[in-house]
Amino acid sequence: MISKGVRFAGTGSYLPERVVTNDDLSKTLDTNDEWIRTRTGISERRFAAPEQAASDLGIAAARRALDAAGVAPADLDLIICATMTNDYVIPSTAALIQRALGAERAGGFDLCSACSGFVLSLGAASGYIKTGAAKNVLVLGAEKMSVAMDMQDRTTAVIFADGAGAAVLQPSPEPGSDVLALRQGLKGDVDVLSIPAGGSRRPTSVETVQNREHYIKMAGRETFKFAVKTFSSLIEGTCADAGVTTSDLKVIVPHQVNQRIIEAACERSQIDMSRCVINIDRVGNTSAASVAIALDEAVRAGRIERGDLVLLVAFGAGLSWASALVRW
Ligand code: UT7
Image (tube, rainbow, N blue to C red; front, side, top):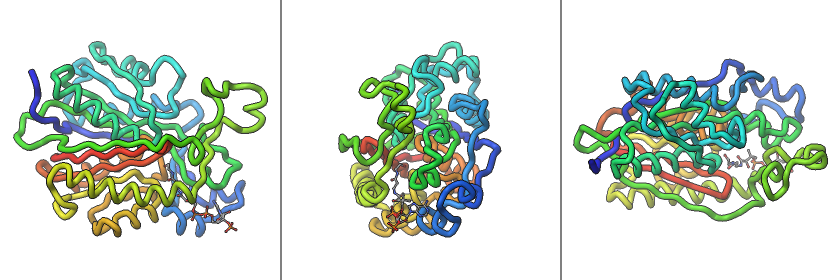
């Protein structure tokens, strides 16, 4: 069966319990609450417990999404987990989530594209559904970014955070619900945002560990400028692809990269901030989980209803970007 449309049947998210405030960070870093709030929009974020890995956060978000969708784990056909902080190199985080949920029939894989991962996963999921290869697809963004952050580097330690979000996608029984347009891009850059060691280019050694090369390195200013331009052209381009305008959007769910980046992009694209979902003040930047968590919070707050046009946009290492325009 070739499906005409794809719909979001349910969403869920999970934030770990431990709240870390800006004041907490300034106890060990040369930073302060005012700088972090005014430069990023973040007041606090969550860090996972030592015994929690990315899959544990994902499993909690997945259970909530499955409940909301009324789908049993045994009925899942596919699990796609967007993450850059996978529990192990192998097996995939999707495999660990599959086992924990008891999703015996499901296939699955991880998708690694840093902060763009969840939005790219939605494109993959909708392809599986539209070709008839899968019916119930669980898509997740799950990150334990606190293991990839150098807590001695104030440019990254104040930004990133832990959490997970999930959505169950299905063929659409209602006319209209669909993923209407998708955009994706790469700049092919390793200099502005990377984790230099731990991969096949620079395997782990005593030297790489001593040099702290397993942590995120970021050239903030360069990323900032690129992000503003990319976000606003993604917003306008994706709407144009589907023959709608930005004024038709009910809400936009951007990657919670930096409040100033989001505001600048919305201003360029003439989108009032009241239509933009923002939780960076409480949640921080949770990379691949970011759009998924913000989407779930918007759905649960009643900001998104059947028939609404919703635009998801993300940007991250790669440099990569992705968007999905959804008729809810
Ligand atoms: O999700 C993945 C993609 N990530 C991004 O796109 C991140 C994009 N970039 C940003 O969000 C911002 O560039 C940052 C929040 C990282 C930095 O904000 P900024 O306004 O670009 O600051 P800056 O790097 O230009 O630094 C301004 C000043 C510098 O001091 P001087 O040279 O003016 O004396 C920094 O050393 O702020 C200093 N600084 C800090 N001060 C207190 C940098 N980080 C901190 C800090 N606390 N945490």
